[in-house]
Each structure stands twice: as C-alpha cells, then as structure tokens.
Image (cartoon, rainbow, N blue to C red; front, top):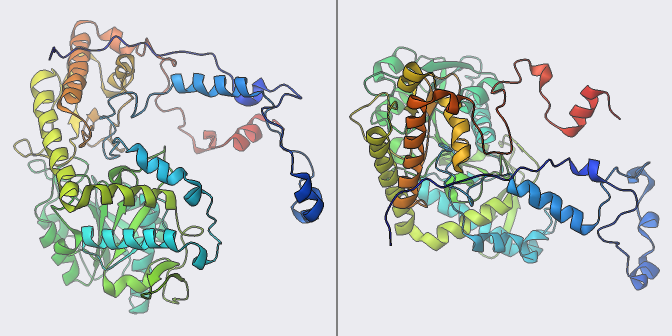
Length: 519
C-alpha cells in the first residue's frame, strides 16, 4: 500500500441547467394524488372542508414535470455542488464542518419524529420532550450553566437573546438607563457586536496585542465603567488562540456590576477541557449544529443553545421544558421571561441529532473529540508553515492553537500578486470547496482560516496541505494561472463583492421578480 501523497486529477461536472420553473411543461405530472373515496364520502372534499378565508384565489405557479425530469434536474445540480461528503472540507473554519453519522439522519427522518406537530398535546409527545429535556441536562453538564433554552434559531439569535436578557436584568435593577455599553473584541464572532447593538447598546471593541493575539487586561480596564452592561466574547477567538486571562477579565467586569457572556458557537476544542462556569460567565450559547455534528445546512437548520446561571434563568425565552417526576411539560407562564425569539421551540431535528451524537460518544469520547481536533489543528499548522511557501500565522507565533488557525497569504500576495481570493477559487479546481477567509474587516491581511476537526484523518490533512503546496508553486511560477481560476469548475471567475449597495441585494425569488418587474 502506497503512502504517497497525491493531488487528485479533478474536473467537476458542468450542466447548463435552467431553474426548474423554466423546465415546466403544462399538463406533465410526477404523481397524481387521489383521495380515498371512502374518506371523501365521510368528511367531504378538501374544497368543502377548507374555509373560504384560507382558500387560494389562484392556483400556485408550480413547475409541471414528470418524475424523470425532476430526478435529472436535481442530480445534475448535485454534480455541480461540493460539500463535506465529497471533499476534504477543512477550509470552513469557525463553522466546524464535520462528518455527521448517518444513523442520526435516520432518527430525524423516522415518521415517529418527522410527523410530529408542534401544537400536539404534550401528553402525546412525551418521548420527544424527554429527548429535549435530556439534551438540556447534557448542555448543563458541558457548560456548568444551570438552565438552557433551545429556542434561538442559531448563534446570532442566541447572542441577541442574551443581550435582551441583559437589557431586562438591568431594567429590573433600576439601572437600565445607565448600563448602556457592551464590550467585545474584534476577533470574537461579529454577532457579539452586532446583536447587542441591535438591542440598543453602544459597543466598545477591544483590539488584540500583536505579541499575543488577544486584548490585554489593561485595555479592558481602560474602558470598563458604571456604564458597562456586559462583556460579550469568543474564547478562543477566531485565531484559535485561547485567552489565558479570561477569568481575570471577567472578574474586572463583575467588579463594576456588569455581566459576562460567552460565545461558544465553535466549541470543538473545548469539550471536557474548559467550561463557561469555571471562567465565571453568567450566560453563554453553543451551536448544536456544527460542533455538535448536526449539519450546518447553509445557515439552517440551526439551533443556538442558550445557557444561563440560576440568577438569570427566569429571563430565558419561553416556552421551556420541565419535568415533575412523572411527565414532561411546557412552562410558558413566567412573566420575567423575555418572551419568544422565534415560533414554537426552535429546530428540534437539530436537537435530536446532537443528542444522539453526544450519547454515542459519552463524556470520554466527547473529550477525545476536542483532543483530536487540537492535535489535528497543530499538525496542520506545522505542515502548512513548513511546506507552503508564502503563508504565515500572525500573532502568538510561539503559541499552540486550539481548534483552528487564522493564516495569512500576505507574503505570497506581495511576492506574486496572488492573494487569498485567487487561492479560494483555485482550490475548487482540485476538488476542495471554497474556504472561509475571515470576517470583515480583514484585520489579518489576506486571511485564511481552516479547521481540521476530529473527523479528518492524517491522510486527509496531508492531501489538503499538498493541494496548497501545489497552488503555492503555481503562484510563484505562473501566477496568472491562479488569478484566472477556476478552470475546471461549473462556474467562472465571479465578482467577490457584487453587492456594494444594499438596494442591489436580492434575497428571495419574490424580491428578484419585484426588482425585475416580473409578475
């Protein structure tokens, strides 16, 4: 068996595939649904049952195709799509793109789960409520928090919900008009500034020290005051560097009466190693997608697991699940709650996948996830810095990283003209999905942030590095080849910033039709 590291000869399929509505032919059908005559005889037809107020005035404009055409359409599109199960998806740092066990998908797709309705009587869904309640207990053990809500629909909404809790907490204390400032750091996830600002707070951002990669204690002391409502921080930040002064920083904020909120959206390097409680955090959130194995799903379906200490539990979003020793039930009548941040109780399919994943691993297995992730990441860093010309890892040069590293192609850009945008397109020609560069602004020039979590093998990492080594050689010998990429993909070179004006952004088919004047 050869251990040779090779770069695959890859060429992606390219189909000139129209949207499915443009393929429609009037009268074609994939299936003709007919009601059971015996049922119709008893209850009547659907047209008779539905009240006039919810009946459509016109039939929906749905595509009309036979089954073979539908199958071909979506299979062609799938051949033009790269993803975790087709390629080595290390490049999407801070998102923890890992392999998700397929048995968990079977649980979610089971009719026993998939056909439940959120408005069913709690007595008919005790098994589902038990799973949600059980996952709450697991999250309490992982974080040290005293209570959890799974209602937020992702990390940004969980941060918004935590900021809303701070707003209510200080209002109840009579300090709502004076506690007006939130402190965060530039390399925390951007929602730690955006969400509190949306709630109405003024945001103060701390910058990192060049030698360490994280803000100094002195910089925090310079901005805390009686106006400080809280500290919202990601640790480790998106450089992968863990801030060893986090406990001291939290104590400083607590001394002036503020609260501290941990963004643990990317927790893959922390299981069994670091908990929010021991650091002194008052609130936190995890993403049950990503690090807890449930697929990210292109911004959904997501679940921002929001945790609180006992003295803030009453403010969590309602409803929440409780257990009286005999049955599980919804608690919805807490007048102190900030209310709902979305309908029903979040994305329960994500909770089930995460619950299954954690139970399969157990406490020791969960800690091993983090240990292997950290090992993989530091192995990747050593290989990248030794084998790939033109790359560096700014800040904390003598430090090990946790689950990811923010690298820089600044040297390569200066020496060849090839930057991170060019490399991002060129990797597609080698069968890799475009990578995550950095949140803007690019504090690190020409950034690149990979995360080699526990589901990647040494061979995967070696092959991944070999691709970047090849692209580096191309950049220094034939930079135009990289700059003009991709060459073997279904898309050509695209504008990396097509929406400079907000009014140009099109977020849905309905908006597209409106802006194009279509009916």
